[in-house]
Length: 407
Image (cartoon, rainbow, N blue to C red):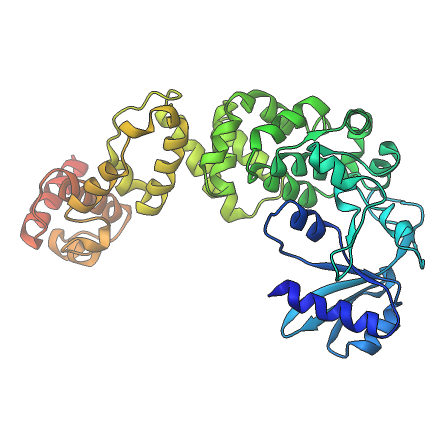
């Protein structure tokens, strides 16, 4: 559907005498028979021409020649052929110049696989051998690799990410240039670095990406991150068996023997959200407490953990353990966790047959921290040790707890 809508953009531009092509990642993915998501279009039409031809548009980046065109609610970025001036911050060009030749536009791009264009008749324009490189499963920089990485240092991590996502190797000269320009990553915003690392960890071959990070020394500017990938590389293949980036980071941090506190520092350095940081901290803390041996499943007493951290966290933790014990995962069943959870007569303090106010009235004691402490004791006794969940039984045990505290 998306490709048919995008074709209407190309049709309209060509009807008015302009060239227009699908370009970049969408062409790469189409040739690799991968799902095509974002469809970018390049043209010799200037932004003003695009705006005139497509009234339903958003002027996304006129300075750089980009107009987002809306067709039946879907957006397509249409960018004028351009060359780029000097890069002043190792990320973005200080200026761009519109040109009329497709090749000039393609030669400014990062890798040969992304420097291809295709017209609406599926005629491929590939001046730098991107299709051949894909056949040989190579990530190769366009032109002179050193220049490409000096222009935009984020391309260093993009190269690693593409190798991980596609299972490709990095071409020798490109690899050498990555090693030489690795220090330039210090100039890139950590949010952009985190985004690329997340995509690498979430790829089909994360172990390839982790190995490349080690071989190229890309993270040398951040010693704690560099050490993380060095120490965890042996277990990076296990990331393939986890579904969320949160769990992937948690496994890597545990594999590198990082403490929960060190894990939080890494998350804060990468400017992860507070929610994600605390989730990773909690999972690493549980792994550190249990200290699972790789591929050696052990019996887990889920009841106390379920009461402490709840079902959702235990379910996430189970999936982490499954990755830790992947080679022997058949002997490790989610059913054990489900059975223990379902067999608990109460699961939270709210399930108890009395409240904090009931306690206060029953023992004639002023409110304070003792209420939460006693309720937690009642929860453990009721959930795990057979104490009946009745007001009478709970009050009786509560009075004994309070009496012990007072003595």
